[in-house]
Length: 263
Ligand code: NAD
Image (cartoon, rainbow, N blue to C red; front, side, top):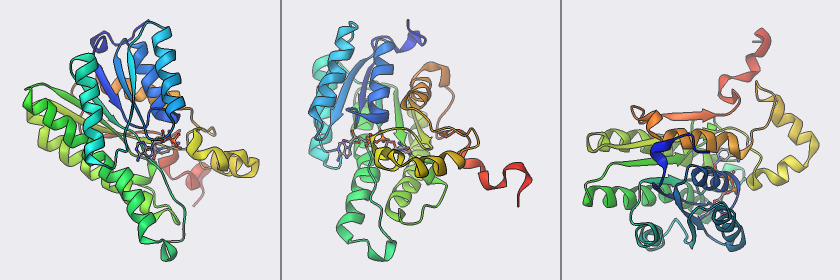
């Protein structure tokens, strides 16, 4: 059953859609009868499985390999949407990664990699999508996957926090720049979500408990919590919303150390 009728037969590109949050968004969009381009970098099986799952339910999807930090690769995603489904309406810049290192020891190549994927990748996806809509005089909708770390500092993850902080202002700037063209740009700021990026950390029960205790709702989120927010931002139900970061974090951004009147 679809919840957002205006999304039926709209076309979405989702970067990093073979697993985790991007995968959940692809499946959720398909439930709304959207056609989806599922981008992957190395996990071809994850992307193919998602395509099969969507096709089994009568939907349409294609998997496309692309490194979203490379401009020529990003173009492949737009081409796949237009060639297979006749256009492109929603672009989700979801792909991301992190490297943990004390800042004074971060090799430049690691810094560049984190910025290239988490921030430059968002720019390249946005650029491709904007040019398509402007050339074709169409409205558009961009959703950037930011993080609670666009707001909360994260020692030993300076490159990641810097990239996500950049995503916040990039989202706000492009939202303002293209609002007169009927193109909306929003971000989602997930908190701690149960995905492969956190698999190692959450496999340690002690670490799992520590993270849980930092969340006022006292539970780790699921990828579907984020895809439920994404589908709303993609739909007309959010038609007057642009330039926001919608935090999906169980309250993590609320300074949980002050819980119960501490401090
Ligand atoms: P994940 O590791 O499961 O998924 C990340 C995806 O990005 C993978 O499919 C990976 O292959 C893809 N990717 C990485 N580099 C790429 C590249 N160069 N080209 C194409 N794809 C590439 O992690 P996730 O938790 O699903 O993360 C999705 C997004 O959510 C990321 O932007 C991440 O920073 C953000 N986020 C996640 C959490 C969390 O707790 N899981 C919290 C805040 C923000």
